[in-house]
Length: 498
Image (cartoon, rainbow, N blue to C red):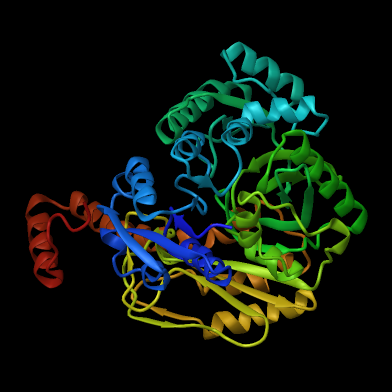
């Protein structure tokens, strides 16, 4: 087993990995930037080392500095967490070339599953169902039109190297295809350095269901059941739960078998997630494979009792899986809410500042994976996730009730958060009866706050427009008199509404 593990990450996931290391008697080493000098992960680790300025490219994405540090401090392995270098094949090869173990899959697996068109081709050839569409990057507008006609509108344009909704466009009319492709390509190039795009059928009202898998280097593979991840905002997950209440045992058996087969045929090892779209007529389609630890892994841990991070470390240390599929059972229900530093009333703009107060919820079935504490700084440089609030109950209803209680107890001061928005989700009938889909928040929640914000601004502009209209209809003498009077009364500055 490893003696020292360097965690090439920050925030809540770094803290999570530190805790696993402590329980395994492994020395935990973390890195930090200028913005993170007071971060929680720095305080809880056995060792912490400065790696550079706040900008991620100069610190958490500086592979040369991280690997050099790992060698200097005698780290046996590097755990990437999620994000940053977690799905970077070049980094994996560089780590291994320096005699350090990468806690994750092989570089070949990351390359195979990281590119969407490559992964779609591989899965289709392996007999795994994929969403109808192209398996190669689209090379011309004529080809795009032909494919769109064959599979039927609407279609989705997606970035081959993408994720998180970047380089993605829905097309409802053929005449919009050219402009949609151009915009998607430009966004993909800026976001991923790769402008390749592909086209797939738009699945109406789908659900996003994923299966957690674990595989060792000896061909053993198991699944830890599924997660429901359909509560999303602009293609980003917000609430996750396990198991999914949208499927029955027969469908669960079907989707988990597909996930295990997909993992085996790709010769994948370590922790991974096979993601699917699930349509209204109970068809499952392979969406993508995440070749890393998922943000939402705690809900799976809560219903299975399996520590996924510890299993990652054991697999990387060339140990065989000791867990057998028949030994794993679903125990209760778990829900996770992602707590972000964001201003919901200002179109979810990131909120920055220092954490001045932090009171955690407690009680039966409550877990908080956090990256903050009092004195922590929430900066503009990184993803604004602060923590993950997870609840467990014997039933889904009990887990929901515990979540609402925990949200009421959770206090964070110094930055604005999205805590209150979860009440709306948990109390909405579509969430309660599991009839929601991927469009749930976009259709029902997002229009509420932004419209309220825009209406407030529009009201101001309407008042100004009315005044200006009255001025323009007045004679010059009256206009000057009115302007002077209003100016004195309201003390407006000329650029106030520019």
